[in-house]
Length: 131
Image (cartoon, rainbow, N blue to C red; front, side):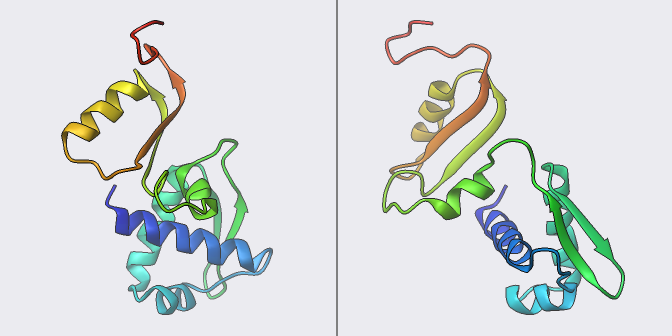
């Protein structure tokens, strides 16, 4: 996912969280984000595919009903108060090995401090190759 899209999703989650049980109109979100209402809808749909339950009612707006029963980079990233570690967070539900992914990212020119996490590793091993 493009980091701009992730940032937009983080902002939408932030606005909806701040609203509590109140609805936030698509127009208000589009104004705050500088996006079209269609673009806001697409980001909300992307959040839904990630497990966020967002209610939408015509003429009222969006409301965050439930968050996934797991940590996601969208929830963790805004809470990090760091200048280096974790500025870019790669979160995966299932992954072979976080070390292998981190190594590939480094070879591809990843920024200093990028972090790879997974809820489950299927072939994870330590830095010395031990399982």
